[in-house]
Length: 114
Image (cartoon, rainbow, N blue to C red; front, side):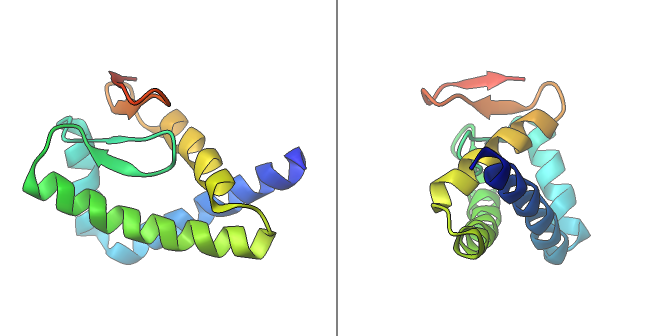
């Protein structure tokens, strides 16, 4: 089961990369800028959230999260695992990959800088 979930996480990240690439370079740059400015952060469940409320940050998070959830659902269905498991593994991987200084949310719901 653990091997299957690790494979699922790898596939999720590959699919997520493809989904983000499909948004276009400008949106990916916006995500990087928003992270660097502390406007958005990564959550433990594989979703993006505004660190402080704000129109652009919220819109960016909503757009990215819609794409991520579509990919997470697709992978979960393919692998026969719950979407929450795909999200959890993708969240762990995303948090591990973001640069130091990026805001990340703990499972307790607290923001902290990596």
